Image (tube, rainbow, N blue to C red; front, side):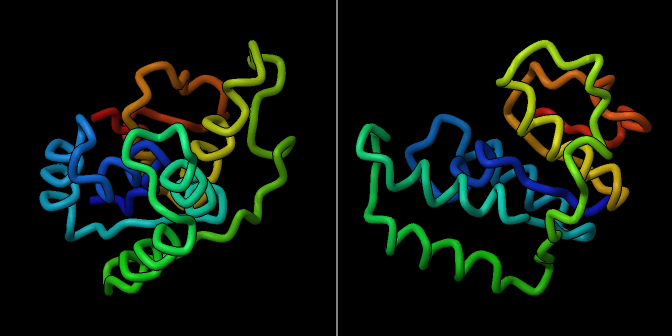
Length: 141
């Protein structure tokens, strides 16, 4: 099984027991343990930002969210993927429709670079935004 880069929405679901996708996310990651999982600066930042946002239903202090992240990434099957791919190098710019696709496209491009799979709750990520992206590079829970 490929190593999985967890999208922000999956990380949030894993950390928040009251999230509507909490059980689905845990079931998937438990089944995918042999391949391990990854985060990057974008997904780590997004997790802390969402969990500490006052409008989030189960908001927690940013320091608490950061401690949760630190505990999670200490797992032996976790790796950190540096964001070492230029935006213009990994995305088919002529296929971008709008600003909401940019982060998703970048995460998918980073996933292709590492030959992993991007695991997300987002059903609207088009693979054709990233040259070389195939079905196995994207898992929608």
